[in-house]
Amino acid sequence: MTTLTSLPYALTQGTQIQATVRAMNEIGWGLVSDPNTVGATVASVPLKPPTPPTMVSQSSTAISVNMPSVTLTENGGSSILSYNLQFKENS
Image (cartoon, rainbow, N blue to C red):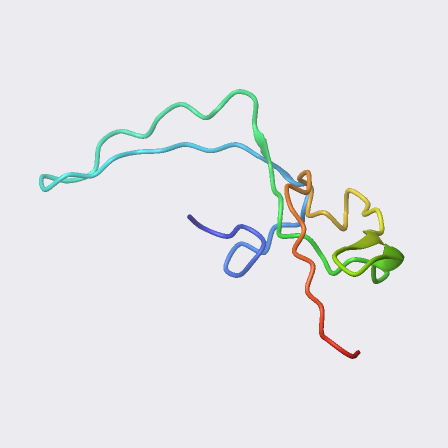
């Protein structure tokens, strides 16, 4: 898969694009398809959260944290599916 937000394309997140496709076999390239009619929006990986998580509560077996909300720009133009919380002992 090509990353459209990097060189050589360097498209901006949120840019609307239309795509075509064609196939190749050992004889050569086939004809190009019609462009998609709906278009697609360029997205990217999420940016660094704007603020670190804050601890809400703790016990001997669990901690609860409050994650900062992210904007459409910060989430890369796509819904956040998962977070990965990392921690260090004694820090």
